[in-house]
Amino acid sequence: MKAPAYNRRSFLIGAGLCSASLIRPPFSLVSAANAATGLAPTASMRGGSNNYRPNAPLVENLGKGFWVSGTVRNAGNGEPLSDVRIQIWAATERGGEREPSNHGSVLTAPDGTFRLEMSQILPNFGQPHAHLAYDDGAFKTVFLRPVMGSRSDTSVEAHFVLAST
Amino acid sequence: MHQPDAVRQRILPNNKRSLIRSLVVGLIWATIAGLALWPILIAATSPYLVGRSAIYIAAGLAGALSLALLFIQPLLAAGFLPGLMGPRGRRWHRVAGFLIAAAVAVHVGGLYITSPPDALDALLLISPTPFSIYGVAAMWILILTVALVAFRKYLHIAPLTWRIIHNVLAASVVVTSVAHAFLIEGTMGTVSKTILCGCAVLTTAAVTLYLRVFKPLRMHRISTPKSRSAP
Image 1 (tube, rainbow over the protein chains, first blue to last red):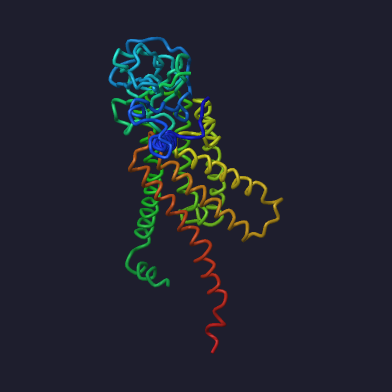
Image 2 (image 1 turned 180 degrees about the vertical axis):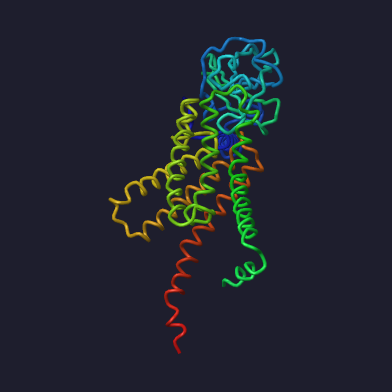
């Protein structure tokens, strides 16, 4: 279980302030041109790894009617990453998060995007949400837990910026 | 004070009076049962329960049931419910207290069996869901309340002090439980859940005020009429 003490908001604010201090005088360690290409790596979200089952099989879909999509980029140069495996699971009309048929993986396209059709995600433990993982070693492991804006949404997005190990 | 009764007696024959009384009693009970059971019925028939395990469904319904009991519990304590006044009301207040504790145990236990990591995150206060902190707070305050009741004999606390501690704990359970339930996007309907939450807060506030402020003041006035009327 990975549960960082900081959250995404504090991380983004902190990372933003740090990079601003690096660009501006008196430090000016990073030139503006370089700072524009570097991206802050995505941090794991609280509870993101709950009910994770490593190595979910590559699937065509996990049902119909609901889309999980997103992008995967490299934190070093901001380039999209292709053929990266993203593991996805959620509580759906097929059952809870531990139901094996609610776990599957997809590979990213050359433009770094991925999408997987699955059964409608239902509220679980009081929030309708999905789980996504990058856990393949080439980059640092990231667990995401995007929450849907509404119970009736039929899609959810999550975006990865991966840092080298 | 008894004049309206006397007037009614003169106008209506006996059987009509008892008919009206049983109609009023029935109406009160129907309203209370409706307010308490409506959100539970909606939760039980929710489309979000498709494909879920019986344990998860039971855990959710136990949570809804304990919220409904929190609404009725103060009414029993004050003896406001027809047919359950005075000592009978207080006896059912104890039964309902036991049922609330049992329902919360089923709620937490059922969620733990369904997904240990999610339940542990909540209990350790590191869950990503904002409402679980209120739920865990409500659980611990409820445990304190149960301990205060169970060990009343051994605690040697003055009756009034005990009642005030009990009221503060009970009101805290209601406030934290309502915050918990209100923020959850689950199987209960938004409208029925909001109304039940409002009713629980209202009955708790009204009964606490009645039992600890208005009733003592009235008793005080009744017990000291001579000092007032004396010239």
